Length: 230
Image (cartoon, rainbow, N blue to C red):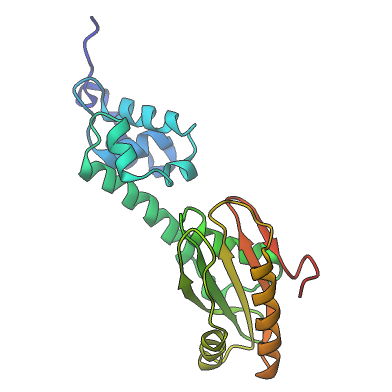
C-alpha cells in the first residue's frame, strides 16, 4: 500500500502556499488555488488531490463550480464539510463580485455585448429570475446599476412607475433593462415583449431613452435592440 504523502512533505517550492509567495498567484493552477482555499484534505487525500477531484467533477470549469450548492459539495466529497463548502462558495461569489466591481460605473456602452458583460456576471448562476436596470448619461456611460425585482423560477413583475422614478431620480438620459431566464432559454416570452413595449412608450413620455432590453441565458443573450424590437 502506498504511503499517503502530506503536502508538508512536499518540496517547499511545490507547496501551493509557498509557491504562491515565491512565484505569485499566476503560477498556480486552478487545482492549487482551490487547495489553498479549502486548506486541508481528508484521511486519504491531500488538499491538492481533493481539489483535483472536485474540479474533475465539473470538468475543470470554474463557472460550473460556482453553480454547485453547499449541500452537493458536502454530499459528494469526503473532507468537505459545512465550513469548507461555505468557503468555496464564498470564494466563487467574491470572484463574481470582483468582476462586477470593475469600473462599470465608468464603462461606456457601445453595443449589446457591453451590457451582457455587466449583467451576465450578476445573473449567470441564479436559480431565480431578477430584473436589473442600467442607468446611462448622455455619453452612454453607466452611472448606476439597480436591481428592480427578484422572483422565483418564473416571470418577475416589473413596475414601470418604479423604473421611471429611479431613472428620473438618478438624472439618467437613457436606460437599459435586463433579466435572466434561469432555464437558459433566451427567446422572449409574450410577457417580455409586452413589458418592453410598455416601458418604451412610458420612457418617451418623460424624455428618457430605453436603449435595450436583454434576456440573459447561461452563456448567451437576446437583445431587443439588435433584433429590431426597439
